[in-house]
Picture 1 (cartoon, one colour):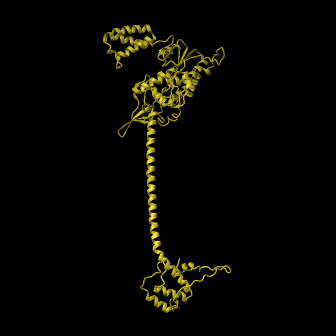
Picture 2 (cartoon, rainbow, N blue to C red; picture 1 turned 60 degrees about the vertical axis):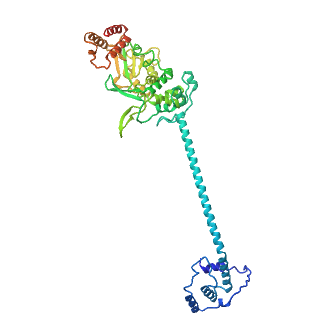
Picture 3 (tube, rainbow, N blue to C red; picture 1 turned 120 degrees about the vertical axis):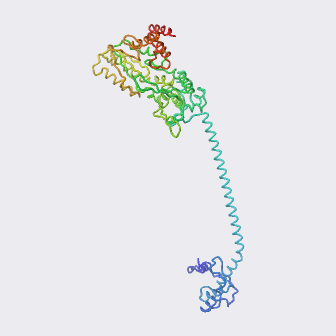
Length: 520
């Protein structure tokens, strides 16, 4: 805003009130010197400005009104009056205002300085308040962090909420069916802490045993390979001491109290390959089939469902299933570190004491369906681990619920029966090994889990003759000379073979055992 604009605004000269609404004039009296406001010519004004050119200029300072006794101001005042821009009274009032402003300037400056100091003090006070608030927030955050760490440590010491990717989503379920567990005479377990207490383990130790990882630097099994009878190699996984003890507890206290089908003969107390073979002795036809990758095909999820259907909570069932399953793994070296990398999903390991009984429990529905199919064809069914066996008369009759069996048409003979077996096995999550399916009739040696059952269960003649020949030559040449297959403990191997023959044929086994004792 210019100096003259400010003056006009100060005295209200920028706009004029409407006619009829003018304010009454205020008369003021000023002690004016006529010489200060006498008219001045243009040339005189210029000479006066030139004479005062080297004096201090007030007009480049917009925050003060020039004093009336300033020579240049007096020239300008005379010029303003001469050209009628302002009256002497107005100029006198302006200079009075300037003198008043100058008088209070020091007070205003002091007030401004005090205001600045007060403002800076308030700013510093606000900064201090924010600093203290920040420190308080940091302290609160640190305290919450410490409390959270203590809570996590306490929870880790008393509970399990995560056991690896893909297997932990039922660990929040802590509700067991107590009535069902009581009816089955099973241990009452609902939480991981309950299970750890029953297993006489700490919760962190139980977590370590059950934790699932895709790539581990250490596993809970010793893996080794043994040759198969049919060729190739079988991977066995022997659990370490602590896990073996835990699995034994699960077997003795839970699994052995669960029901299995009467058609299952493998790994069942009181049943053996001999009881399995007796069911098929003296039949016209014996049909053998084999389940491919039997133990590995029983996955972690199927094992967990076994424990959960028994009545255990999702958390307990998950941990029990993890303790009883393991991934197939391959050893990999990376940056000087050995890793055991999973090559497939978790399944029943061959070597754990819980795997056989779990396989029988998981296969209950399969056994019931295959037994029902066998009854439809008037056949006898049994299963020893992954070996499936049916026996009966030819041609295969189809009863269809009728009292008198009818002769089966050709399209519903052995081929149709085996196709139905394959479909049922696949629906139950298993696969029939195509190269190990055999149909044995009376004119050939009918083998059931290694025993000949054409008339009665018997050890194959070739095996008995081999043992007799070993014992005969051992009397003349020594026992170690007969170890042509390089068995690491030949004497124990031979004693086991004789015990095996004695189980099936006690009369023959007694004679062989007497000959063996003579070699000692």
